[in-house]
Length: 92
Image 1: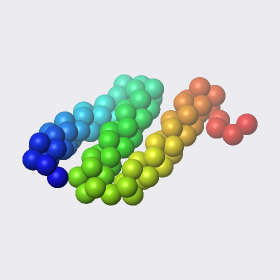
Image 2: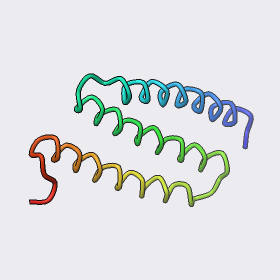
Image 3: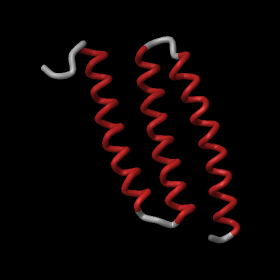
């Protein structure tokens, strides 16, 4: 890995760490359930970005497949939480 790419990965990891800390703050401190659902969805997106960074750093394709799977599961979880919040029931 080139020194410039290595520095970019380190910088991106620092930025994502800060974003995850702020998301955790909103998740635990959110005044409404909708705020907590949005924080959890954003936390999943940040976790996907961390997995992609690992894939770049270690130059393996397995991390990209894991990120894709987490994206699909995270989307379904967000839809289920929102449906529960709106209707009070997930399965009709």
